[in-house]
Length: 180
Image (cartoon, rainbow, N blue to C red; front, side, top):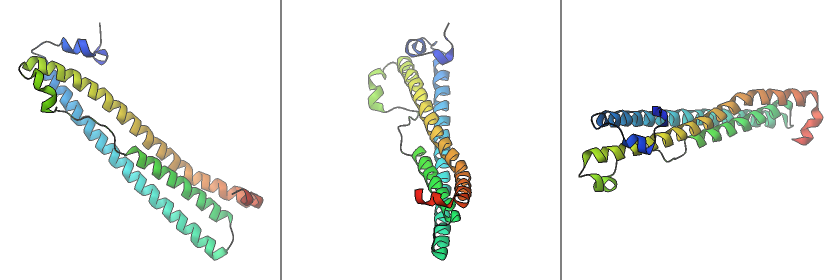
């Protein structure tokens, strides 16, 4: 026996006629929720990209100011610069998470359903199968963009620690500056 998660093409076409409208309604509701989740994920990723970009710009300004005052590459400037670069990378990764993608919405174009329009039950069966495919593709897109956002957050979390480590390393071993 197949579980609902394993149902594909032929099994979806075997849904009882009286249950079909409810199955289509539930699938369209899930499509709407997936679209809302995608919009929320894009909003979160773009807000993180903006915040990480602003932090990076602030760190670059601080490093530039300290570097201009001291006229030497100090450990603090090095730590700030490394933190700034990592925050900029995190911003770029999060911006990549909210790039334009192919995401499916509920509904259909009249040109793609006109051949089955004379049979409402048959049209709903085909539409139900199409919604199933769209839902699976949308889930894969949501998972991929979520991974990008998580990677951006991981780099941003590592940025201050990398900056501190660079500061400590250059403070302890000033000769490291020739490698940077």
